[in-house]
Length: 230
Ligand code: 5RP
Image 1 (cartoon, rainbow, N blue to C red):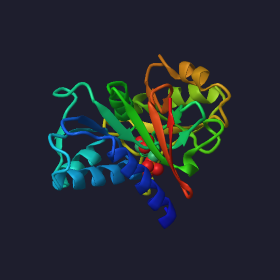
Image 2 (spheres, rainbow, N blue to C red):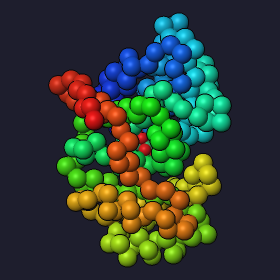
Image 3 (cartoon, rainbow, N blue to C red):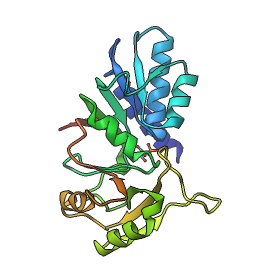
Image 4 (tube, rainbow, N blue to C red):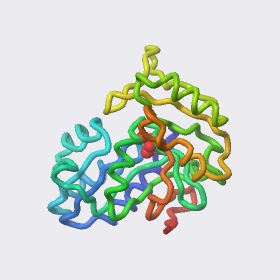
């Protein structure tokens, strides 16, 4: 990631921190942009500018990080509704539909997004696309037992499917013990149809299409930060 991209992600993260108020339950997304948000949030909490913040993390790694920064982290059992969640995205289309899951946390991210009163997505301008799928294959979480039939099913829908592997050649294992297949559908004229075709298939746990879940997208570009409300 270039220094400029990090600078832009930080600008978007800081704009989102300004939306946090004392006493809020805050969903903590996952990825490099969400991490910048969590660090900025922790600084404000440590400085006493925000009090009584409770975080609910979308990934075990983020939970560990947030705790190490001194944030109070709870669970969905204790806090089933988030006042605000701040998360990144891999692609954002003009209708604020998203592809997520580049970090492999799409299932928890979607659970937390659906449990949030407000979902703010923070991105640098490189994430904006005319159509979802222009730049990114769709991550899909799959039960290892069902890898082959689910991969063949998604291939039959017209996607090119690849199991996501780590550098050691082993599959990336999600926080739920599942695997991720990256499904290249190309540009999606109708993401809703793709989403529906992926739902209700046994062994296919969840997909990274976040349709109608973002309340607002904060985009940082070289000429400044802009907000796109739903
Ligand atoms: C993780 C995600 C991330 O939000 C997405 O991959 C964006 O990551 P980054 O902020 O590092 O560009 O969906 O599962």
